[in-house]
Length: 378
Image (tube, rainbow, N blue to C red; front, side):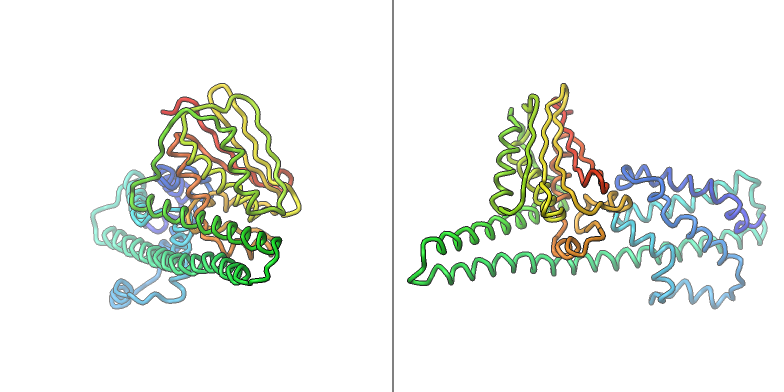
């Protein structure tokens, strides 16, 4: 059987093998089956179709040496796969590993089925398949690299925007404070604006430093001590409430919240979740913080109402520089000017405590982030 025909006849088994391997990669452990199989069928079918076309030796040589990607190659299934894997947090090593595993799976399935004969036609089939795989890999890596470059540029642009806003507020408040005949109420108002702007800049710079630390491989350090998360929750709420006086907040605390944890880091994580809830939620509905002490764990929940996050976007919401889309134009405008580092830092802090964090989003229940912290960490 021709290899191209074999690929089409055994497509489901090969794709299942692809999914099984992708799930073993660090970035694929929490992804759905649909997301793991992303574009795999289309990539294999494109390779099989290309194998059945008659290309001259010169055409194949030119294709293998093409370093200027065409418009078709940047929109192919392999290219789209590279873009989505970059968004999902895969690195280039994992992307290469996926294609290497696909190549090995196809060859192993083919050999087990009937074994290719050692004749020129079989060698030609394998050669054409390898050329198709190399082409798909090149397209995927090229698109991945393009997305990385775009994310870096967006990162710098948003960083400048986020810092310029509070700096402008501080500058204007300083001009107001310089007036000789300033009333006491105006002076207090200007001082409050400076404090809010400084708090926002501090949170942004802290997230940026934590992101840089994790990318350098150091991780986020924690110092465990015996602490009660009740006061930590109250301090986090007070911090966010001071910067968002117009927003309503609801707090519910029950059970024993004492455990071995880094109180400062947990306050940072809760402040980031609450800030995210205010930024992306409905301003007319309250943001809730719930803390429950269970027998073997402490469960923290932050909930906000508003447009739900699409289910396919929930897989990558904790990745840095990723903005989850929704249908509200107002929320979209706010989320466009955010680095997307807050949730990433939250995840790293929770993982450092040996805990887990998950998110659910629906029109009825709103968006709920749940942190599960074991009382006895591994």
